[in-house]
Image (cartoon, rainbow, N blue to C red; front, side):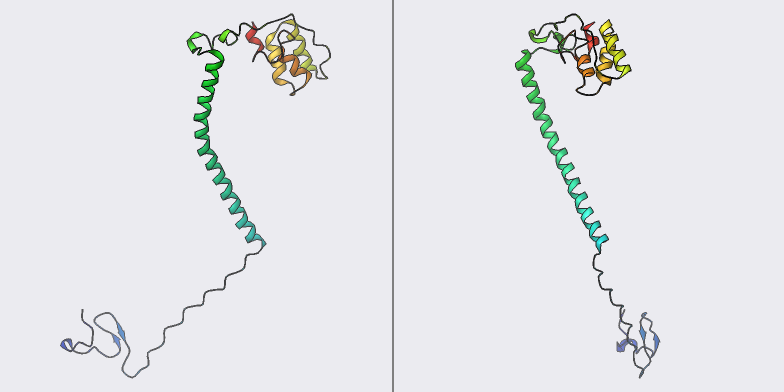
Length: 183
């Protein structure tokens, strides 16, 4: 396209649209000024609610960064922990493999031998709970599942828990993970 003032094409008509898609005012008329763009509103200062939102956003961002960092470090720590655990197991049990009975009889692994058992001890007064008292009496009578139930359902560090952990006085406290393994 060529501009309208090119003499090879003649002159553009005065006033109106030109063949090139532009508008030209009629001769002698003033060109109206383009309207001014509206002024941008002044920024509002943050009120207490706005500051709280910014602070909450920063706190959430820091928590997320800490979680991601912990997850990344956990992967490295898991590898180191596994190696350390294997080294401790090697030192304690001299390389006993799973085929040698580690899962079948954990009390006989590495020369530890069987768990020493004694005769049961009467429960006596362990506390005010009739359900736990019934478990304790059944445990004393020989129902080893009741010993485990007593241990699991009693409050931590209570006399009930201690009696359950000894399988009714048959073993030292916390020697076995479950009394039913003594059968």
